[in-house]
Structures are given as structure tokens and as C-alpha cells.
Length: 427
Image (cartoon, rainbow, N blue to C red):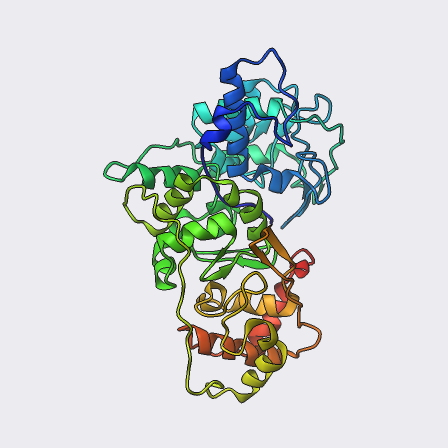
């Protein structure tokens, strides 16, 4: 199930200027200056929720829908949420819009919880109103919605009412006493519009997030959404600086985002203002701190050298030199704007080797944020390397450049191959 992740708030310059945005219909003379400001804020909030990431197909019109989601009982297609009155949501009243966002009930019926209304219900009234104004002024796109392909009886939407009754949290967002405004802002963004729990929290038999295991990681489209608990992030060496920079550029001293998280970084997180990026970092690391405008520096990480480069794994060492060192460097230092470093790389250093193996098998497509933050595509080696060779290479990478010392076997690699879906095979 592809769900999207994260975040954020208010770009002052956008709020003070009646700019006409690419996804916004021309502002009419009937709008007041206040409404123009609210629409601009609503667009920023839509970026926080990564609405475009789910509702805009590749090479498609903004918000015209058509993105295909694989779920355990079939396939769903994202709907048209442009302001078109026939196929989109242009006829929605504010009450209908808010009910769809918070309760998953649209004028046409119940929404499947692939739409993260379980998180969006925490959006406050002011933000919800600005979102509504923005979507009512997006460019209308007359694109019919695609029919879902859901197995019986799950195609009967009335059954979702039962799920909502059993699993939908009816609470609202409340700041935590004793926490700073920055930390609480991060909590609001992560828990609500950012909907991070939808991907990074394991699900129970009814496919509802298990909040007793919040942020401990979950499988999404054949890729592991990693553990992002404060304990694990701190173990890997993440700091306020590195997490803030990751959101801004999609890169960090720990590597880059990939798969669905690249979409979140590219379409959502990179749009955030400095305060909100810092708020998210403070909440994820559970740092009860105040805003610090100086936390924008890009951290450097010292190169790690070992006397025995093979580290007892001559086969893995040879595979690395043959297939990887040409781009990542003999010491894993990487190349700026070409390939990320392997020194302290978060994917390598995760307690699970799953994503490392998946990336070796399938590769990663080109990632572009801006002229100074981008990476070349990484080829997949799933056809050229055997399971035994991939295990040897994975062990070499993790043993040399991380603190992970568990040994990966051919069986582990074979299990990963079986879980990789057609969607994830394109990474």
C-alpha cells in the first residue's frame, strides 16, 4: 500500500504576496486580500500533506488523480481532487470537504483509509478552512476517475463504516504541556497533515496502525519504511542539523531519500520553511528545544578508514571494487551531486538489511531537487549478481561502514526478492 508521509507550515513571503501558483487557478477580482492570503497558506498546507504526490499521476495534470495504489485486496486509483465540478471536488461545501478529510466520508460515499483521514482528522479548523479555499481555486481538470479493482466483498464501501467504528481514533490534537512550541508544532505536523504513522508504523490485522509500536517501521510497496523512533535515529547519529538538512534538500550526511520517500522529500518536505523543518526534527528526535535559526548548517562526517579493507570478506571486497567503487569511491566517500556517501549511511546502518538488499537488486532512479542537490541513477544488480554475491556485498558494506555486524545469508536475499513488488522494482 502506497501511503505518503510528512509535513509543515507557513512561508511568510507567500502569505504576503497574491502570487498565482502553477496549481492554482487565476485569482479573481472577487477575492479579498485575506482570502488570497488564505489560499496561499492552503497551498503550503497541501504541500505539507503531500496531496500532489498521491493525486497527480506521472506526467499528469495537477490533482487529476489516476495514481495506482496496490493494497492487500486489490488496486485503488487516486481520485480527481481538482476544482472541476463534474469529476473533481469543485461542488464540495466546506462541511463536505472537512468531513471527507477528517472522517473519510465523501458525498459519493466512504473513502478507503488509503486516504490518510485517520491522521488528517487532527488538522485544526483554521488550517482546514485554508485548505478548502485553496482546493476550490485550483485549476479544474476534466479528468474522469478510474474505477477501482477491489476484491469482493471489500469493494462494498459500507463495510468501511464498520472499520471506522472499530479503528478510527476520534480524538483531536492538543499540545503537550511542558513541551516547547517548536516540539508541539512538530508533533502537530507529523501526527496530522504529515501522516508519518501511516507508513512508518506497523499495522494490525485490520490494517490500522499499531500505535504501541509507533514509528518502528513498516513494509510499503516492497520497501521498508524505516524505524524513525527517537532511539533509533539517535543511535544512527541523526542530529537536528542533519534531519533539518535532509528535509530541505533530500540529502544528508546519512545518504539520500529514495523510493516513495523521494516523492515526499521532493514534493513536500523541500517546500517547508526553516521553522517547520526544525520542528519536525525536534519532535522526531524528542528534543524539547526552542527554534534556533542557526540550525541550517550542513554537517560533515569524517571518513572512516580500516586497515583491512576486506574486513575478512574478500569476495565482498572484490564485488565492491568491481561494481561500486567507481561511483562511491574506494573509501565509500561518494561524489557530491553524483552519488551519496556510504560513510554512516542510514540505509546501511539500519538494524534491518532489507532496504540495502532491495537497492542492490533494483537500483535507484535519478533524483533531482536542484542543481546542487541531485544524484545520478544507480543501476540494479539483481540480474548480474547471484543471491550469494549480493549477500557477500551486503555484508561487506554493513561491516565496513556501519556498526551492524549480523551476517546476511543467501536465504535472506531470496526472501527480499520475493517481497519486491512491480512498483518497487522501478526504484
